[in-house]
Image 1 (tube, rainbow, N blue to C red):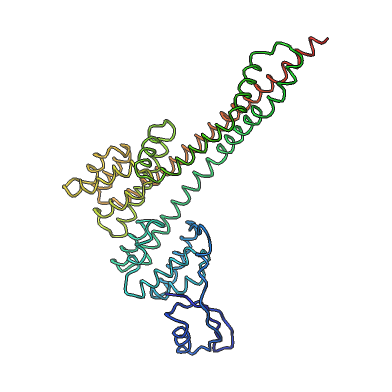
Image 2 (image 1 turned 90 degrees about the vertical axis):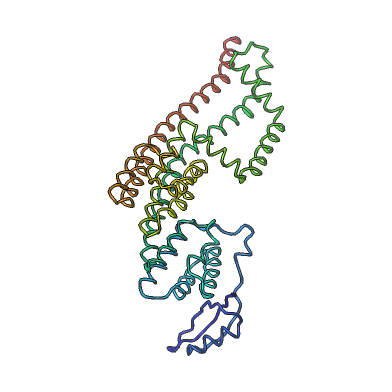
Length: 400
């Protein structure tokens, strides 16, 4: 349904600008005049999101803020449709605004909020639509959304910690690569002519680096072409399921990333499963949705078999044991929660424990990586400086 920007005069004489969805401009004017408002102008709103070439990504913080405002209005007693109309006026992200308007149109047509958000699961998550469904079934939509907001905040904070912790080592690696490239590709070849004029025997390190520099400069176009082919090949296959599955399985075999990925997967799966169970969704439905919350496709594919094991009469502990994905400590905690009839609470404990362990492991890894990279850069720079200045010292000694 199109949106119209209306300039109206209120009963107390104030001139306001409102955005109203209606079938036509005449219908919009009639609706406002029926509410006792004086309409000055009505014009169709330009869809700014279509003007952007690539659109705008919806940040987690923007989606969390939208849900916080929605929960506040629902708790205040506003119906769902009116709450969406009020929240829509304060949304600045055009992509999110378009989605809210489509959802609002679906709700006005008789669909539930979870059904209206279902087509956008690729932008948000199945966890969100499942939380909406649980809130609608239990009659406590604000409470279910509040639990989801808390869950989304924790997930966003964990991802932010990982990104910030890996930022400094990444910058160091990029800086070292640029430094080595400049020294080998630009600095050393300039000294080659200078050394050749003296006809002196160069040290072995200098000869090796000069040959490397000359080889790189002579084949620079081929290196660039090879890099371009690799980048294009990656862009072509990176979204294919088989490549993603292979890539995620390879990450689990690397010595450092394996523990980080496993701890992250356990925390995400446990927190999502606990949230869904606490919201009132059945265990069978919850395990299917929770498996999609794990970013690693290989782990997620193993966890998707849990639902089939539950259908065959196995307990959650036995079903997860068959996947051989979760560590034994997490399995023991889940077994205790299952036997004590406090599975959602124990799953929250598992998620908190592995979140803390993930943060500690990241900090430890970063604290180890930083000095190693600094020492590596120092050794490379020292070796290149020696290869440049040692021949100069020899030349000065010979000339004397």
